[in-house]
Amino acid sequence: MTGKVYLVGAGPGAPDLLTVRAARLLAEADIVFHDALVPEPIVALAARAEKVAVGKRCGRHSTAQRFINKRLADAARTHKVVVRLKGGDPLVFGRAQEEIAYLRSQDIRVEVVPGITAALAASASLGTSLTQRGIARSVAFVTPRVGAEEGPSRWLEAAMAADTVAIYMAAHEAPTIAAALIAAGKSAATPIAIAEGATLPAERTAHGTLGELPDLVRGATGPVVILVGEVYRALAETLVPAKVGIQAA
Amino acid sequence: MTGKVYLVGAGPGAPDLLTVRAARLLAEADIVFHDALVPEPIVALAARAEKVAVGKRCGRHSTAQRFINKRLADAARTHKVVVRLKGGDPLVFGRAQEEIAYLRSQDIRVEVVPGITAALAASASLGTSLTQRGIARSVAFVTPRVGAEEGPSRWLEAAMAADTVAIYMAAHEAPTIAAALIAAGKSAATPIAIAEGATLPAERTAHGTLGELPDLVRGATGPVVILVGEVYRALAETLVPAKVGIQAA
Image 1: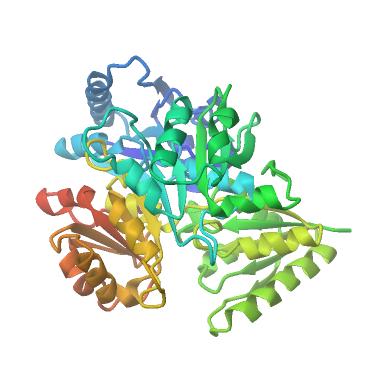
Image 2 (image 1 turned 135 degrees about the horizontal axis):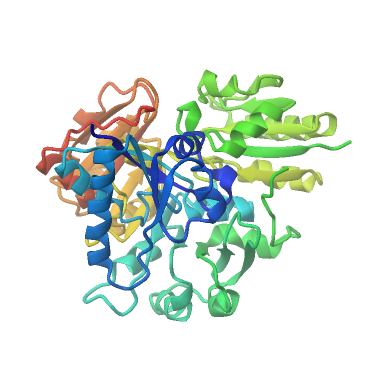
């Protein structure tokens, strides 16, 4: 018997922001391999599954990835429903491709179930469209690797060219990122917003200007999305409260 | 009494790709205003609600938008749970901001429930990451307005600068878009993929090169997402089937 591996997006953190399909697959799963950062209440939805944390926090990424690939394939040979649960959407900064390619090379069926990616959750919390008629016709999702690149910095080019930018996994490098954007020509007065742990109980949102970015993210301990663009000007200029939660009704 | 308006993402089309929260709100809704393009099985989840189609297909966008704003506010004054249901995610090319701003100006509570946007659904169907380690660190979502802009074309700049590009609502202008990208310097051999009606029963995916784009979308009748970038090269170069469905298990 060979089972099937479902690469499932866990969404931004709130358990009810899983898709209906993802929730069903978790309930049916025989075994779940989850990233260390997926909140426990979501993992717990896999009531009858063996649960395996496969965080990649030790800094030895490639070894860990090969090990995960192998474990997924082994699991599919002995289980019917294997779920690989990843934060957000599996195909946005999720390193899913190595797993898909390896499983296919082993003739194991793979299906991807999309999830709400962090930029969409942050936007919902802020009540602000990533694209807004008359202001923004493009949005770029980027993850900077500051200082590690040679030649022209592709993430910076993408960030400069798009009307709205969502920067993932960058809280620790916020001062460098703000400096890079300003050096590339973005005004320090460009409106920005941030969301930390969007949709989680400890969610925090804030807004200001690009020059204030280091202050806005200081002290963040959860995952942060940094949003940059003119669409965020209204957060500062109107009486709209900065924090608009999306708690369940 | 004043109710609350929920701007809810209907996702890409498959009813089980709604979020759990969206499905619950539909079930609880007293009245639902839905875009004409939201599939009927999703609208039908609002079992007890009055259902109002508010498509904007007549070409008189601003008048229609003002009318929708007013109807939403009126509904919130006489109903407890008002759902405004939009295809995909409400904050990605969804024109939600006008509705949010108007409702807030009327002191009506608004909450946004995110949805799976078309590019994520298309990526799941293709089994291909929008970002892929070593190949793509940025992805731009754009919606071109070909020929209607003066000065430098911002969508084109964003599309050229990002490693991967997802082009929304552009099937009818595919030849012009391909020509614009090639004229701006993208090779006609750049790998692309398209997904029409991703996650719907009649889903169709295809891949090829930028030069072949007009042929790939020809005859499309459903919503199409065009994906451009090196991450799609593997679709052509390996034995991976072009069509990898995400049908329910």
